[in-house]
Amino acid sequence: MTENTTDSSTIAEDISALLTRIRSRRRRLSRAKNLLKAVDGKTPAAADYEAWLDVVQGLDGYELGDGEADELRQALVGRLKPAIEKLRIKARMKFLTKLEMLAGQRDLELEKISENPLVLYVEPLTFAIDFDEGGVEMAYGHEVIDELPIDAASVMGAHEEAAARFSKELISSDKFFDLLRGAYRMVLAADDAQPGERVDLVDVLVPLAMLRVDRDRLRKKGPEVIEPFPRYLLARQLAELRRDGALEKDGVRLELGAATGGSTRDKTNVLYVPIGAKGGQYYGSIRFE
Image 1 (cartoon, rainbow, N blue to C red):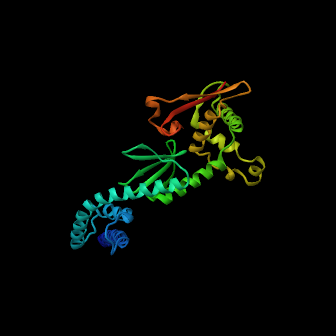
Image 2: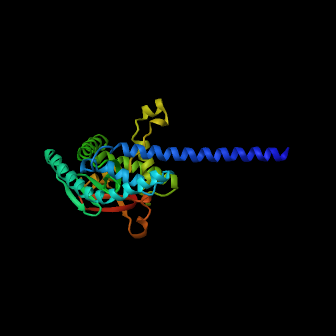
Image 3: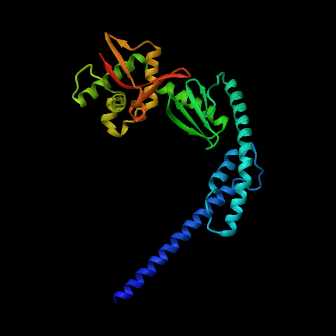
């Protein structure tokens, strides 16, 4: 009886293992099919750069589990890699030409921050363009706001949306000074610290989220109405305080503690506040005195 149970168990395990193998192979073949369908019948061209990049990255080193198909896969990848290198140059030129045209139509100025990686500045945002991975990171300072395709229209559209979002979300410097001071006091209370002591700057994010919610709405709807206060928005608000010369009010001064050296390794503990296109500083602490 015990032997039969063991045999049955072994058979069940073998069936399960084979099914897993078949499912894995089916997923691989399905993935390969979708990649190839995107470029089927096309000649590699700059307009389809991202699709061709997906093919190379998706198939390179990705065994299909079929000897003949894998030979064809390897041959295709081998022929595409040199073509992709040429496409990258053409795609970059096409992207930048169209981006400059669209920016000009909107009276926006493009400024190159770095060449490798390619980072562009369009007030007040930066766009890091990675042609190897096929994507764009839109950020304020060093805080990523969105990830975009390498498409000039998408980048300019995202810039417009972000500018509108900033316009809607930004609080006047006078009001934000009071809001930030209230958040600072909440962190002091949580830490059982004394007024004037420094607290971690990033610790004010949660109190800021709570304080900016309408009290009546909070009572009616509950805590689910509390939305996170984005890091990029705190960085922008602090930059606005500096620009407006609003770091002091009613005899109370806001002091930001600069973060340097090893304290900036873990970016979750610090916040970068930009000044223009290339300037800025990491800050780690805050106090009002």
